[in-house]
Length: 337
Image (cartoon, rainbow, N blue to C red):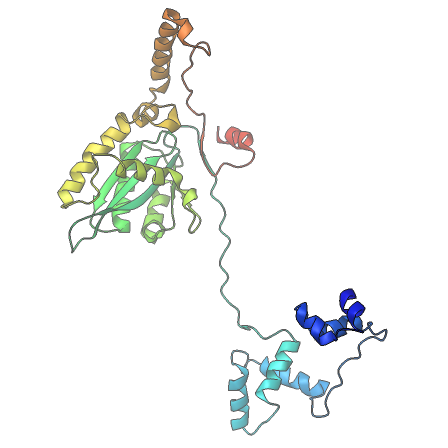
């Protein structure tokens, strides 16, 4: 602005603005001092509807007869019955002035799902279960379906089932068999799952009530709410003896029969002090950890110079396992005990 004003006697404003790539209209607008008078409201044209007429139009649009119809539909309906209130565009103006240019019907609101918070301080307190697909080479059966029921404290697979399809009846069979095998008492276990249709089935929910099992569900589209089942599936599928695709149902079943005993009794799990799930589930953890510590003590006594950090200690078994731990873990742990 200052440069254009300084050279204005010599160079035209048009040339300077073009050289500076500055709009000439902006130069004149900025150069003109702002008006001291407040901007006056735009006068209403004589053909505009008055306040009573606008209220009448709004009342018709919001009536029970026309509340679900667009203004164009309302206009034609009124016109067919011999009534003219205003143009379609004016109807939109009236709705816009009242902030009603939107979907005016009551719409479905997604419910707010509570975050599941579960704690287990011992085996058979919280079970997590899910279904995963196993790929096949067959054109008529793209997948087999593996049902797995897992104890989150010990990571022990308390039950599994392989089938050609997903169904609530198969899930009921797996739950009932595992319940009897583990000798669970009513009110002892919480069964946590996602919101799949087989887990939300009415017959399965009734079975949970009959057995005294408390149901728990993940939030929709939140895989972190069921981490133990997801981790278990990854461990199984990444095993070197687990094929990427199965050629037959019997082959898939034989693989599961081999891998689940390995997972329960040979696989050392990092989340449970490198113990096997079976050792934790059936109460052998303290005995195994004590024996490991004895071996380390002997090794340290023989060559203490090799242990630069002092006497080695075996990791301890976690006191509690959580699904979505709350902020105050201590209080929740005391309540669980």
